[in-house]
Image 1 (tube, helix red, strand yellow):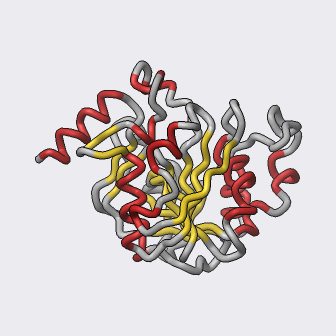
Image 2 (image 1 turned 90 degrees about the horizontal axis):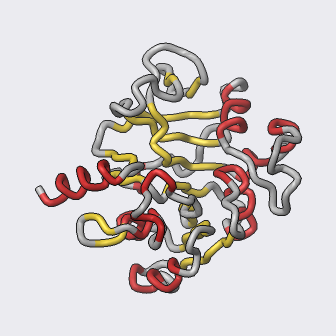
Amino acid sequence: MRHALIFAAGLGERMRPLTDRTPKPLLPVGGKPLIVWHLEKLAAAGVHYVVINTSHLAEQFPDTLGDGSRWGLRIRYAYEGPTPLETGGGMLNALPLLGSAPFIAVNGDIWCDVDFAALHSEPAGLAHLLLVDNPPQHPHGDFALDTHDTVHDDGDARLTFSGIGVYRQELLQGWREVIGNVAGTDMQPPRFRLVPLLRAAMANDAISGSHYRGAWTDVGTPQRLAQLEAELRE
């Protein structure tokens, strides 16, 4: 996989006041911005081209990260406008920059020690999701993973979606039929969540997954950011 997408457009409302002046993916942890951990790991995995979705305080991303050359990457920025487009709209907005091959997508507000090179470069279906053990703040999980590595919307022993996956562009085809005419879809570009598309594909057994048991943190609050900082110092 040569291309990757990093979702970095969110408002970071739960992280205020830290995000009043700094986008969440640019908050420092372990001595560098959170997003830089992703960039370093993507470069180490052989990714050469990264698209970063931006909205909130968007100008800070190119000011901080530049063109990506310091990591051996080429970074392109997909500005979503003043209102973030959610994960589905953000991915759709970035597709023209991502080429036709499957690509990695990762949430800019997580930390994970996964080796991106170990991800499935050619998903059997429309996407391959990395699932993790349920954290305390999300005890019921998101999806179930069966013994054939197929992800289901329902089932026992549910796991949490890590925010890391490998996607085919075809997942977004026919998005309007799945999403419908809900608020935001009449915008240009449209705003909608990715999860309904994933669930529709799961109904056709078109989403595979794997259970990652390494370190993972959803940096959703200042307290979790401080906890991650302490863990990285150790």
